[in-house]
Length: 296
Image 1 (cartoon, rainbow, N blue to C red):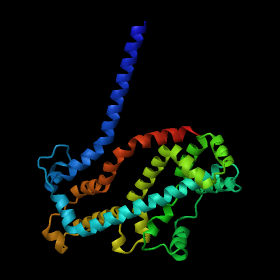
Image 2 (cartoon, rainbow, N blue to C red; image 1 turned 180 degrees about the vertical axis):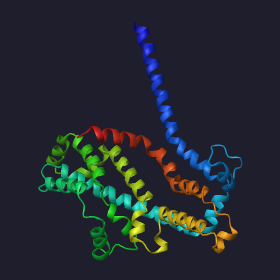
Image 3 (cartoon, one colour; image 1 turned 90 degrees about the vertical axis):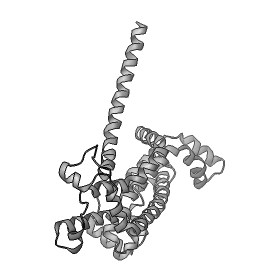
Image 4 (tube, rainbow, N blue to C red; image 1 turned 135 degrees about the vertical axis):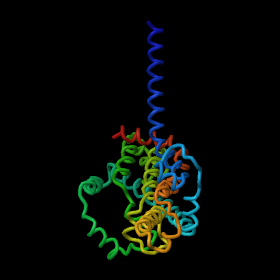
């Protein structure tokens, strides 16, 4: 009886591993497909469509991208790195302090701030009032802050880190107060080390949000020196589609434009840094999402 139970458990574990492997393959397939597609030639894609095994491996699409937009791409990478790093630091700081404020019981306006944050998840003023306030009254245009401050705090991330803090024994905070510690010291010395998994999780969420954003540059940035990598790739794709639709233009008449393969190349250029960073934080990310969802 015991032996049959052990064998059935092994079968169940094997099934789970097979399912996880299939899910991993499904998740990896679009990335591999995009990378292989970016190495195909435009003529082959036009004839046969995208395949996992192209007849010819070619870097012509990447050469075209970097030869035509090389300096702009490097500057856009610099802008995206500055915005992502600075914005993530600001957002994590604002989110943690806000979450701590509405969690501490003796803070006078904690309930009001919690309601205020929740209210913004349900209702907003709309795009036009937001744009007028952002540009006319706050002056957030053509600057790094214009791409950072509108995303300073995400309410979902705030409640995620709040669940971490709320799941900690409140007696720790009370005992620290008795010993004379202030709120800043409690937050810095006690809450942050115990909420490391949650902090890593929201850090990754914010970093992805800032890195992938092209909406704020589209709305608030006119200076080409401040274009982000996502926005400049979006503009590049739009320009190529325009040239392909107007073959009478001088450039389109003499150059074969990679209208199909460039979509895959742009995808790889945009997600490359994310793929390199994610393996180093995935352990904390999974733990943070799981524990943060269960607590509270």
